Image (cartoon, rainbow, N blue to C red):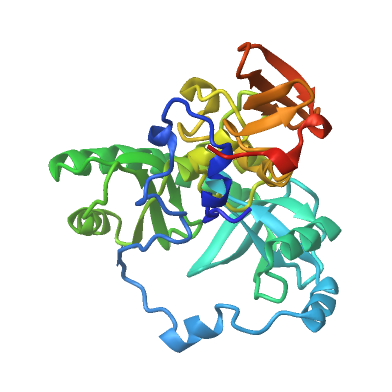
Length: 345
């Protein structure tokens, strides 16, 4: 469902209850892929026109799907649940879980094969990225590569301490989530969260002076942090943003209200501290079902007389009404409510 949905047309069904605005996404929280970053780098990369050419500006359609279906495209997963698609042009034999060296943005990177075959093509179609360029798988990782990766992980642990020290020196309120070195050390990325926008240019200069490589700081939201760190949801399973979701949408508190959920913050908050993404999954069915029912607090007439709508049960097509004369509340079938005599207050 479109996250920018206008709820005004459904305001008649809005029940009163506790405010949950504190659990909604804040305006400054953007997806990792959408946030602007500041770079200090010692790298002579391609010209801007080459970058534009590589951005996948070609139109997508049937021809691209046919051409892509013939390619052996592999999904590779990296640290912090980051993943990407790469073409196995040389026909290297790969299995799920194989460690491979791939083309990075500005160098090479090392990851683990997460998916292959038809499942990758279906995933790319569902994400609308058929026909967009992919990187290449260079080779299967050897023992030297795995040792180098272990060294990188130790360097990342040290980078966490340095980052926190520099933040304290510059008096920056930043919570570090993940640190990730590119395999060839051509880039060092820090993912952090903060309650407000942060001017971290001085911090970037300090970090670049220490590591002498491309430094990237990305301010992410609470949902992105949960996706990178991972957790177990209230359902007892891995949270959806890690297990299968490819795009994170903002969840409005009205989605919960129109589903007549108990407006209890402890029940509606996910591992990220924001409204659970699963509230969105059935919203379309709820909005469609609401069209059959009279609005809450509206006046209707049944075979027993005039009454007001107290609540509705969309699963059983029942309406709970309160009779004006006796004050009795009872459940009646939707077909017993005379829609022609519904009267809004």
